[in-house]
Image 1 (cartoon, rainbow, N blue to C red):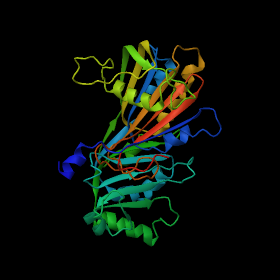
Image 2 (cartoon, rainbow, N blue to C red):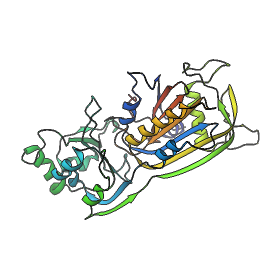
Image 3 (cartoon, rainbow, N blue to C red):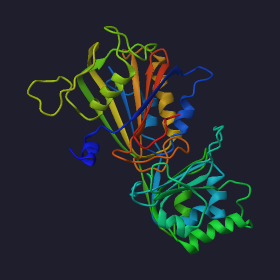
Image 4 (cartoon, rainbow, N blue to C red):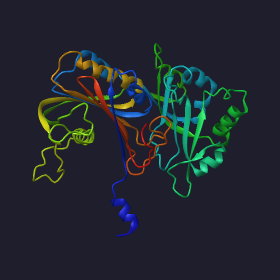
Length: 373
């Protein structure tokens, strides 16, 4: 078998990082982990032994916030001082190029201002560009970590909130000239802005001269009947033989549930031989909700808070899960960590919140990614 064909048959490397803590612990990093993962396209939560959502949880689920699609937006408009003052420096502004392929096309993303982050990944414009575009722009950058021996892709980072990045500075004029005059770039952008007390539709007014559409996340609810669920113990990440399943076994099981895979390993099934890990228990029903769109970390934190509040009253469920998938073609995964596609572009995380408010956090990436934080 030839080497290229053998590589195609190999399972690509992936990383799964697990950590355990308590939601109320003063050093818990659950909110920071959510805030650090800026670009999210799908959120799912699963509640065993639940038939109807409590009203507070349902309210948060159905109010995930509006986002916008702006067609053919010149990139230089995101470095305009008016835009920076109105959105980047006030609240959290998110932008991600839409329908661009991270391994083939030029892509762009605007990381939001995050006043909670000690790493100060604030108001940064990240460009992942091919070699020709990089040379034409003439802006300082670095080779992509996933270019291979022959460098064909570069990463450019522009700090829009740098004190030296103002309208009279040479640095600002150089960047504006490169993006507006020397090598004009246009993208379709997904945009959203989070600012407490402000109306997100301000973005729509600002870009009214462009083709802009408002969108709401799509929400689907379903009840799963007779679901075989793994038995979990909050203080046993690795699981215990004949007592509880491990975090990795749960992670794989969730993937099967979300993919509607039959879990009974019937002898006549040619689709899957997967079955629920043991020990397990049969649940009469489980509530599954999936939200798709351009979903902000601030909204995910609100949803996570409500899932924790689910246990304020006695419930049959021992635990709930919250799974968040990032965009496969985003230039970054967590914080400013460069993200690549290779064979799948995976970057996702999953919370398992127990009745005691202990939690597991599982963070996973594919082959072309740094280890999650």
